[in-house]
Structure formats: C-alpha cells, structure tokens
Image 1 (cartoon, helix red, strand yellow):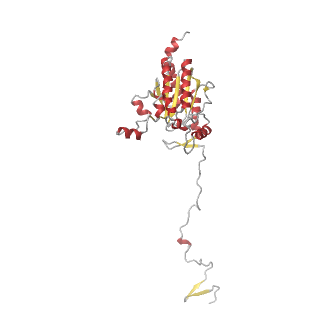
Image 2: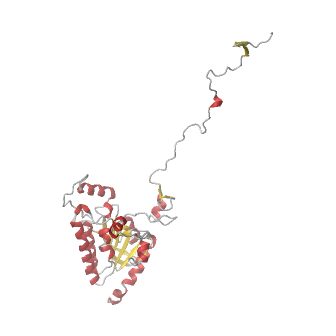
Image 3: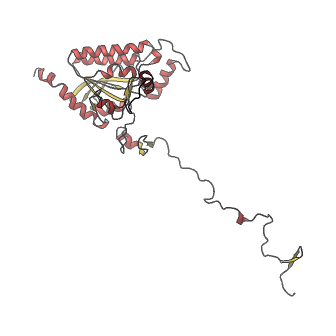
Length: 314
C-alpha cells in the first residue's frame, strides 16, 4: 500500500502504530483513583496564649476578652479560676491595698520525703506562681470601707492550708479586730496541707479562735467561697462567717462524693456539693457573680457596719 503509516505485526494481527505508544505496564492510569487535594495539608494550629476553650459551652474565648471580663465566659458566664492578685485588684480601690507578712514562707518541719521533697515543691510553686504561699493578706479599701482582706490562691499547692496560711490569716483577723475593721476572706482550697501533718490541722482551731474574738468585738466577718472550697478550710474559718457568699457553680464541701457515699451508704442527690444546692438548703446566704462582688460587698458592709457607725462619736 502506498501509505506513510507503518504496520507492526503482533501475534498474527496487523496493528497500526500509534503516534504516542501506550505505557509498558499492564495497569492503566484510568484504573487508579485520582487523589483530590494534591496531598496532605498541614493542620492550622491555634497559638497558645490567645484563645481558651470554655469547658461549659465549648466556645473559644479570646484571652484578652476573658481577662477583661474577670475570667468569666462572656457567653455562658462560666467562672474560670482567677489568681489572688487579680481578684484583689478587682475589689480594692487603686493603690489602697497594703500587704501584710509578704515574706512569710513555710519550712519543712517534718522533713517530708517522696518523689520530691516538700522544700523542692515549695520552691517550684513559688517560682511558677510568684507567691510565697497560698494566701495574700492585707488592709485595703472596698468602696468607702477599710477592711482586712485575705485571698487564697488555688494555683499554689491547691490552696492547701499549712502553718503559713493559718498564721497569716490569724494575724489578719487579729489586726482587723484591733483596728475595728470588718474581715473578708475569699477561700479556695483542697484542705489542710498533708506535708505539714498536724501542724496544718492546728490552723483550723487557731483561725476560728481569732474569729471568735473578732465576733466578741461585734465586728463583721464575710466569708466568700469560690471553686473549690473543701475539707479543712471549709470545716473551719470558711464556714463560720456572719455572711457566707459563694460564686456560681462553686464546689463546696468537706469530703469527696465517693467518700461520703461509702460512709453513709446512701444515694446522693445530684449536684449536692454545688453553691446552688447549698443555697437552697441554707448553708450559704447568697450566690454572687464575680463581676458583681465588689458592689455587693459595699452594700453588705454598709448594712453590717451601720450600728457601729451610728455609735461612733461625730
């Protein structure tokens, strides 16, 4: 034939050569499933320190907005933990707070040993929190009222009460009594500090003894319970206030639910250790959101010091 195409003989068949020869492999590209997206894409990670996920409503909250809102979720009003210095700053008038016993620190009296010694733990927490121990005490003004104010911090060893916490609170109460000032203690704690054994348990009696003298002088004591307030702290000074307030949703109790259930052999009602349950059953007097606490304290102090101010010489 007078054509330009060439023929290739294969097993008795004449096959016309293609312009582009087929691949040599038996598997063709049509049998393979194409991959969409052109490979793996890197997951975008949210930088730390910018956003916080709310454990109650699962929404992402901008950290700056959370700080400006006193660590309260703007969407569901969940109360995040807040540091003692931040709380003091939110309550007292500017430059009015005078800290007491700022350099007082615990000592390892029992020479407690374990994975890490008590002394090592104290040093680690002092470095991470910037605090000397689990409470800050001092004198300051809330509105027009000068008060003796103590604020515990859960970030320091779970707010546990050791000899320093008990001593600082006792000195604060005694100072308030001698100066004729109301005492306000804002509590958050897992209880007595096991590293100090019976020395920590003695603080329960010591703080309550000081508060008894304070009550004898007919001076008000307001106890504010925050999440969580439990065990030895709840069994002592936190539960003997003339007025007991709590933050919404705070866990308040002496022992854990499992221990109580095993001891009483009874079914426990749901939420029996929450501030709301305890308000219904008369243990606390009011639930006050964090952003309203300062105004409410001013209102309560005005009412509780009325007779004292009326009796004062003009």
